[in-house]
Image 1 (cartoon, rainbow, N blue to C red):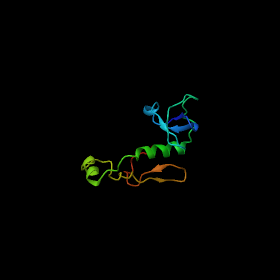
Image 2 (cartoon, one colour; image 1 turned 180 degrees about the vertical axis):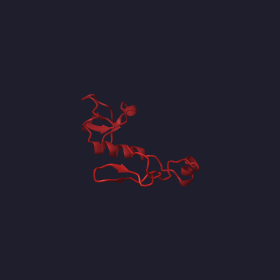
Image 3 (cartoon, one colour; image 1 turned 30 degrees about the vertical axis):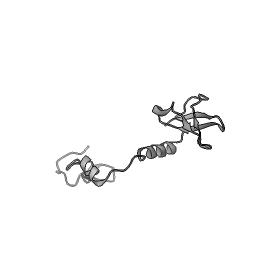
Image 4 (cartoon, rainbow, N blue to C red; image 1 turned 90 degrees about the vertical axis):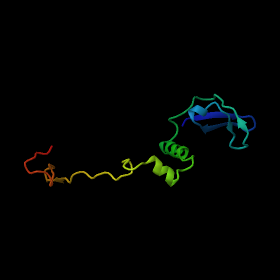
Length: 113
């Protein structure tokens, strides 16, 4: 989410993160709580936010809605949906000292790549 500048009439300028769709809406001042309009002091900044902060903000935004109940979860994940089933493990592979791969369960006349 980008950072936008806002200007409070009492406290002065402050910076806050908002969705792009909500960038023109007024924002409450963090000090006094008064609704403050967006000010064009600098260009909106995306890359100035650290990757960990961006990840945390994204997680907070996604989790802002109420979690699903078990019945809702079961309704969206019908039988055999495949997303919750553990993935099948690959074939066993053994390596020689030279680094060549071989598959113990494969037919001996097959050549591996």
